[in-house]
Image (cartoon, rainbow, N blue to C red; front, side, top):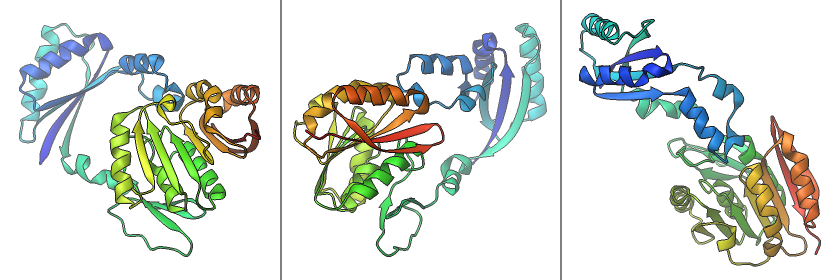
Amino acid sequence: MKWLEVEITAEPEWQDTISEIFMDLGIQGMEIVDPEAFRAVLEKNRYLDYADDVFIDSFGDKVVVRAYFHADYDTSFLERQLSDAFDMHNIDPNPKLLFRVRDDSEWKDNWRNNYKSFLISERVIVKPSWEACNYEDGRVVVEIDPVMAFGTGTHETTRMCAKFIDELIKGNEYILDLGCGTGILGIIAALLGAEKVTCVDIDEAACFTAKENIIKNHVEDKISVLAGELKDVEKRGYDIIIVNIITDVIISLIPELKDYCKPGTNIFLSGIIKERRQEVLEKAALHGFRPVQELNEREWVAIRLCIDS
């Protein structure tokens, strides 16, 4: 189905008025992009480390309101109606108008073209469910579809964790995955031979997605999913602990991780921005952990820690 999209770019103070004008014209749907509201959310959000500065700046300082009409709506008539409404409400200067015809397919399936199978580590291929993939010698295939939960394997923080897992998994390990998102890292560990994986996330939607992906990859006998925090996990010595979250949360968890370690436990910390690398290392040293390996991709750092006793 086709739609007429009308996009208006204006000063933020006119957002409510423009929205009301559109509502009076009988729209079928509306979308508002408010850069100030977006920035306000980021300022209060503990996950700010994941927000790219270039992406934030791309929003500019004006509000964008998009309204959707049936495709056969007369654009000339609509433009006159909007112009009259702007004059009546003394919107000055008149906002910038842009008309487009859009198709449902743009929101339905075309996004799939941007997500292809790829090699995430030496032994692991990640692929979407709709794409065929030939098994290569010695490699396993993880099937993950893009959803709202973080972690399809394309982000640097996830890739670096996958590399650590690929290098360290030899078989029969007990794994703890904190901030599991879609479950991709736990699934990789299970497919590479881990004995048991405990996936934990505070987001129930992420846990639901992780469970679906675990079943899809036929490793439900090896992986359990817990909606909660580290304190909700039974204390025992794990062979590998994966913490792919953000710097602030990583730092807050370091003192508690010792309760889940045994001599020789490997801890993978990822989601660390380079500017805070030293802060993480100092906190780790304070609690008896030593760094043994480090990976870097763009502005991100992943650190492997060990504990000897």
